Image (tube, rainbow, N blue to C red; front, side, top):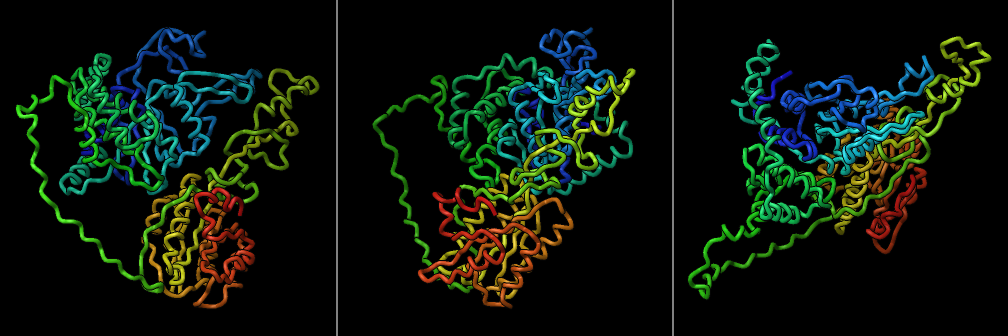
Length: 635
């Protein structure tokens, strides 16, 4: 394994991991950054620095000696010591693998229902590492959230009822370009760190030099850094021993609460995490009193992901605002400067400043080239693709699906090959017939006993936005409202783990501004920079949408599509759109038309287009804060 001490740079990440190693109560670390920045390397190296743990030999739940709540307490033996574990949760793991399941061997050989622990049990008192945590299936995220919040895993499934401790240091890594993290899980991480590859050529050269040396001789390279890692591990152990003696004074506590209030974070978890991190930082520095520097560093790590007011705000912290908040807290009386000898003296007046010169407004031409920022987003719209996908689509939170993942809801007799065996239902079906089948030892199971698991969940869809960016849409600032509406729909897509794509049409052609991607942030950036003006090639936009859908149906056939067409229905360039609409309708994609026509005289062209597409049509002015929740309930 690559040594922790050998990693070049990444100082904030190293510190965040060490803080959690000193005090696991901080709540874990989320590492965000571009690919190829050693995120996984440094996290895996952390396990070697953690202090050894005392466990009961052979305990399947990593329990400490004397733990009477362990499910295996009846078989507890002698105490032993081992290294803290780093357990990896694969993105494609099943629910059984995470929480545990029925012991198949014992069930099939003896007919006894026994529990086989999962990864949550293995990670107890160690590190649970989730690479690409933003791509984790939602039903696994829910289970992970429950365990992380309660410190206990409750298992009620397949005739098994078990409760066991699951306290672990949660570390996740992710690339934001592949999609964002659910807000519920984001808040569960105590600290967050943004990492990026250094742009310093000398530092990059050192990274390459060390990596090549490691690949040439892993054992020799590790030996050269063993002393540094051992020193770090010893320092972490000493900080853990010092931790209970660190004092969080009233002044430091007021600094923490003032900073959290200044950044307007939701709830009180930010205050608690910042306090715990500041105490751990003081222990790591060898102090027994929390200082302002500890609070500042803790806030830089604990607040960036909690101050986001909407899904598309860039995470980060204004350092000047942080310093202003800290300086606003009055120091203790023992540290305050002496009072002025002339209390009646008034400070000199501020220098006069010139009044700001207002910018002169500029006129806009409806057909001229222009780029308008998105309008204000509304409450997210509830979009759904009708029906149930029997092929099991991509994991998400939008439309109903049946298939190999999701929550187990029932068992049924299969109508063909068994897709997912429901073991306990199969055993129950076979049990009454054992005497008639002449059972002698092993359980006798026949084809008629097989039962298939019925799992129902939610899938993510492909939401394809087809936006009219012509001059008629830019007139009277209508495009600002259009962008605000699309931004609201993008917010909904972000929350429901969809893929999104963006096509605009103007002048004489349509352009795929964003191919299907899980990065909704990328769609927001394209929307912000969307140019407008020119004629309206509506037919080109419909044909471009159909072409993109055909390619996606081949590439990802299980993911159903929802087309959101934003237009006033006019076409002033190219052939009539009737044939193109019929062609798009044949692809069997659900559709919604947002009618952007305005003015007293309305031609109803967008609504006619909605009829041709068999789509629900809504007027743009209906997308208001009061009525948005009612809009586009089903496609």
